[in-house]
Amino acid sequence: MTVSAKPPKFLSWLAVAGLAWGAGFVYNVYLGGEAHWLKGLYQNKVAIAAETSDPKLIITGGSGAHYTVDSALLSQELGMPVVNLGLDGPLGLDVILASVLEAVQPGDVVLLIPEYLILEGDGFGPKSGLFGIAVGKPGMGGVPAKQLALDTLQLGIPSLRWTVKSVTNLAEEGRFTGYYDGPLTAQGDPTETKQREGDWWPLKINSAASPHAVERIAQFKTEVEDRGGQLIVSIPWVYGDVNSEQTIESVRDTAQALGEIAPVLVDEETLNIQDSPTLFADTHYHLKPEGREVRSQQLAQQLKPLLLEMQ
Image (cartoon, rainbow, N blue to C red; front, side, top):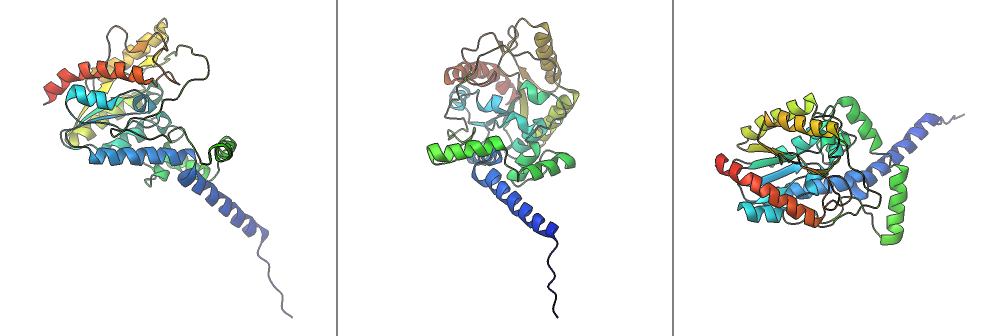
């Protein structure tokens, strides 16, 4: 008499769970998840930087760099190639800095424009781990092992919000879409402008750059110089609360701390805090095309004397 042994039920459940996780991973990284669009944004910008002649000006930061400059205008004003390697703030400062370093060549100047949110905390954000995994560089920027493990797990679990969004995209547009799915210019700037749907309010800056952020940017300066480049930092433009003493103090302290590391570009009167949202697009950092033009003209005037000194 032959007795057939059935596999334990938990093995069947593990197999089903593995298939479900794999499907979620493929969606998140290769089809329409947030990691997919960030991966594409990064890879496209790295390719643009590789094709840009040296010496060049490399702009980096979060979306407050990506959506705030007109690189073609800057290039014209400065007489040198400019490439925009701005990514996404929730990647975290440590990951953003690590992602740009490989693009630095001898003679390049790196202009770091960090939003205040990425100057807070320990240098990592909610997308730090998933980004490195998506681009094939797990742990990029030194993401802690625990966060990396959790992010790896979550890459196989599409959120309900993104699932609903993707189904809607397919039904209405016939394709997946994402926040960073728009085409880029030859310099890496976005070609589309997102519009704000809600009401505006002036942003309060509650704290200066954290000790970790200051230390990491100082380390980044050394890393850039080791590759033959030089670092400049710009205080970001933000629609902020100009009547808040805490905001003013936080921005001033940030500028002072970063100024001990590298040259800092900031309007001494406004501290780059704008009192009106007129030139802003969908967030307190992102600018409309006309705002990017004004901002880039300001950057060009501030950069010219520094670039002459660096030659």
